[in-house]
Length: 439
Image 1 (cartoon, rainbow, N blue to C red):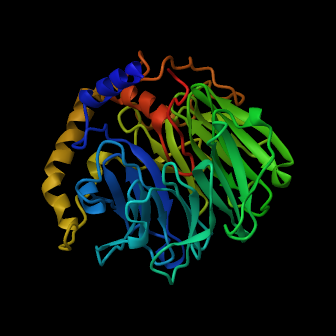
Image 2 (spheres, one colour):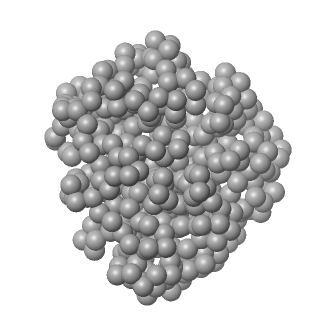
């Protein structure tokens, strides 16, 4: 692990935000119904929130989101927007919710000090699910309805596993799938519940398909027996399509580096996946075949109101957050970090801590841009890239070792992103784990 520690130091000392991490995009989530214009954009330096579909973003700093002893160099909260429009986030020490307008941060006291690793919701946000993952203890499925103020534990706890992700079938709020590791065998597994988490059973899938770690990428929009998984294999990933409740499972795509983005259309016929070195790929036949449609350095993907949204490398690319109306061939920049409007305007206790931190953040962002300016590409760099067509295999050279990948352009950005691909925990339904088996 010495190599990993050294690489981490190189990444973080080049150009970093005030918390010691290079500023980067990680996940984007959207409200629904009357809150459909609400966007929460997770970054390595806090949350960026918008009430106008991304036209304006303001910064909610870590000092407002977490208690002072809690936040540090590696807090990446799982985020959802609930039916009340709150940004609900689970993290290492519990679960909280931030309410726009009221500007208050609510804490679920029953979960204080308990790790909440992942969150998901039904399409209407009527039910939110999560997983409580205390180390060395039984794992719990959590459930909350919009009228409730806290999550409740379901069932009797799940022993001898370490959960990683959870998802719910859009057409059946009682059907859940969970991924994680078998503690005894140190092997990945997939679990299923048909009663909202009261009981779970193991899904029998060939171990070779689950790689070293497995994460739920998405559920099929209409078939509760179908889903997509992303499995880590060495330094890359595979995309696994599961049907008939697990009786049929097959690998449909591979990347040489970590697959950080996955999204599907409302009907499930079009699916996308992407990675930093492998670009963006699309299938128009439900995952049977894929075509590389862009060289975009993908850090997350999501679909909202028929458009594909993507987190990008803001140093080497044209945006931190962009959206596409043509299936990913071209993107319109939504946000570049230098265009953040400022901290959230609120006098509530805690939230006003962001204002004095704002000059330091902007200084870090401007420094990063100036040091890496020579490596940026304009919007044409991600639109109709010549020679970008191809099959699902990735031709970029694989990364070596467990730390930042040497070579390439982009200075701190390229180094940090290479490490991020190994250590990403969640990004628009695309969670990833570090190089657990690297020694």
